[in-house]
Length: 253
Image 1 (cartoon, rainbow, N blue to C red):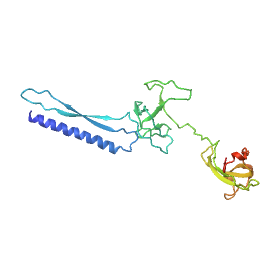
Image 2 (image 1 turned 60 degrees about the horizontal axis):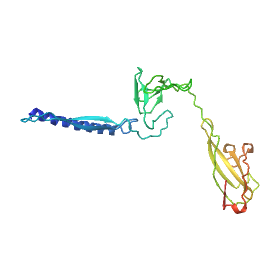
Image 3 (image 1 turned 90 degrees about the vertical axis):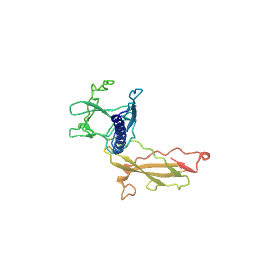
Image 4 (image 1 turned 120 degrees about the vertical axis):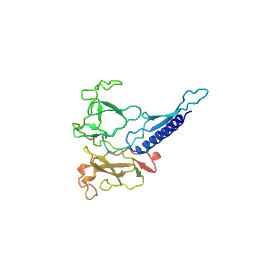
């Protein structure tokens, strides 16, 4: 083995270890990078043929691999245009020249024209649903176009149904009904533009095992008290009475 072989083998080992440390540094530096996949370094030995009277030293090679197929941890964000893929698959994005790329990073924001773009300046691609279900091409990008939300009018859906589960005192005194109620609770709902609407639920025991439930908009109340306009109420018919043998200690409605 020549002196040159000794130096070459030692140098390859140092280069291999340097590559290993570089991947570790990359993993640490990109711990909060959206869509980044862990890098790992694999070592392999290069063995040279040696004769009977001499030995040819080999070297060490490294191969860096990225875990692009491993699913990452989903993180909730406050942006309505952030996306994530659960399972296999990639987002198809293109640069300004139309060259297609694939990525797992789903952090997109609309640009000045309403096109969804990521932090690297690549545009998100998708199928147009304006004319019905698209003709999806397997393992191809034909028919994909830049997703634009500039002309999309987002309309919220108001709350239309709610369920209240409460415990009522079976030993409560009988009242004549609102405003002389027995129990009260509140429920938060939302209108079609996302504004919070608080509904007050008044429960009055009008007879044995019979309750009258009425719902009022809290905005109609006076200083947080009982609603001043009873026209906003929506009375609920009393529930069925229970026979004495099936009467619970605390009624539930």
